[in-house]
Image 1 (cartoon, rainbow, N blue to C red):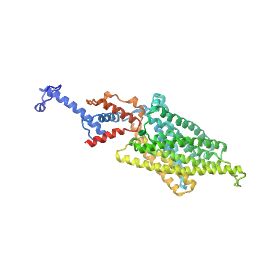
Image 2: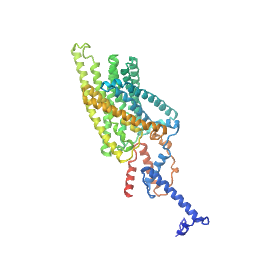
Image 3: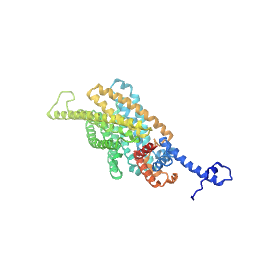
Image 4: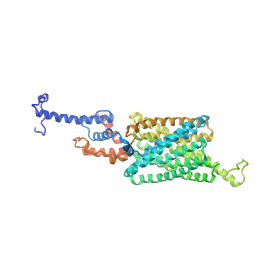
Length: 510
């Protein structure tokens, strides 16, 4: 039968002299084909460390694309490229580094007087990081203004814009701790209060614009729902918690100003906690019908600890301020002077009681979410090898938020159990900060794309399909569609569960 190619006989295959050009040409074509197959085998081995058969179709093409993106462009070189890939998720670092100061200074034991220096170090480092990150963040969008719409259109990284106001509030909290620890003047507190009002404006803008952008421009499906939707909402709760601490410190300085901060904090707490509880309902629905998140974003399972812990802390601290702020009793302790003062006294203590009950309820909810998150994390850890990424900073601030609530409940109830638990959680939180700081610093120097992850730039940096080897398969068009769908899912930061199912099916076939 006549064919387009002449295949050598078994005798010709043994000849290797220059007098057999047909054999040489056939061997060259055979070598070229084997080189392509070898390239495909090596590429897919880098994904799951197993050799794929040369007859694989659509999934092989998807894996080749993933390998090209991971091997060819797995490093960010130069200062300029690092700035270009500096995403808003970096501010989760300043959130995690700044909050240990507040936790340390809230330890309910005499040893806290010897921990002022470590707490100060955390504040100084946090201030340096926040200032540096803010400058880099501004330079990124000033130099590449086209990145801003890409960030807003990205369904995941646009949510991390909420980390910026939370970083501001964390810095303010550390400043208040420094004022009380070192006896700084009232001017320091006034300056922090002005910064708090500015941060509140930013927080409100993020809480309105980012969710509205999600409602109008993003394509949202239930199986892609994660706790990251809480990020634009939690800044309002954080503002309320820091506002409660500010009002507490302003009561002996300026009662009227403290009242303004107290009222504003309650206003911010309302939409913060109520919207967060609605979003937690959506996240719980995802867990029930679509299982736990994929390993790339499994750390986001810890994010519900943030709103539950901070909301409880805010409600209870605002109740404490109410008992101090309202003109309840005579300063000398002479008792209530009139029925009006009695009513105000009862109102203040009623708010304290409501805040205490609310804090304990949310604390229990936070513990429940923490146990679910721990189980989910270890399940994903057991299934596949997990690599560090910037999302791992999600371990720090949510746990710190629940720790703050634990410490305050222990203080108000004078309960040793909560005090001990709060101290243990503080030590755990500090260890986690150091644990995630080491690979982050290493990634900064090496330029790892797991650290400088900016999937919103995928449309700008996607390599041409012509650079991929042609599989020669009739199903290449369908494979390209699968590849594009997989890459779109990967841009969402959620991975491709469909690709994982394909890999499992191929393993079963082998």
